[in-house]
Length: 328
Ligand code: AHR
Image (cartoon, rainbow, N blue to C red; front, side, top):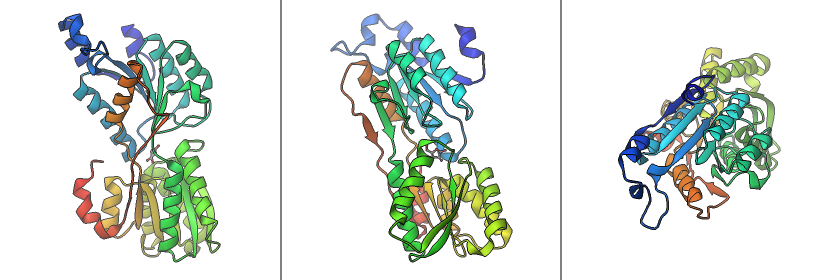
């Protein structure tokens, strides 16, 4: 078993406090007075998709930090941006008979078979941050944002910023991922009301700063000063675009308006520098809610099919004031 845990492609970190605690406690101490399980009894698997962005790093931190605080055992896999690694990790966790599996699916499709295997093994799946395109009986809950609404909000903000007229280029997220699909769609839904705002090109920047910079440089080579606005599906790509725009000799935030998603600290710094015009919040601090859902599931309590995050929109005007309060 130890070999299984330590070998292979993914980084696995196990929070062992609960094992130590449980083994030194009497068996009665592992249950709440009403016979229900408590956090310290849980063995939870979490299949993270990778570490592509500031957002993702904060999300992983929230999961690991909360597991430690709750003294439960976390079996954490980092799939390094590959769906096949995520599928293999789920299979390992099924073999290990964990209580619950949390997963942030890198793309929406291709999960049915492995989720069915988890269901057959009696292990509930909680989707964290990203949805999967599977029948509803294959997961117990989705905890995360309304990506469609984030796309709509980005469009509403953009329309105001450019007074209803612009040539927008879009830096899209990972192809076939839920946030990329939904932000793309939500943005266009609102833009139907603004015929003078044209999305002249849309390419993936894979949610990374480096790709955002490269793709923006290509857009500038192709369209030059025709571009008057950028919609970036996350802050990292917006920060990459800012670098490309400066390298091209234009002023980000002034010559080219930029709206992105996440509201990470880097975005606040860019807004304070006048280089980013707005960021739509997408909350990565999902650890506490995730483990609360997991505990309820294990104890057979009802949980909602979707637990939406509560999110806002931030602008340069109050970025200095808000930055110190940001946790990611
Ligand atoms: O799924 C959430 C998205 O994934 C975030 O917007 C992005 O930064 C991350 O990589």
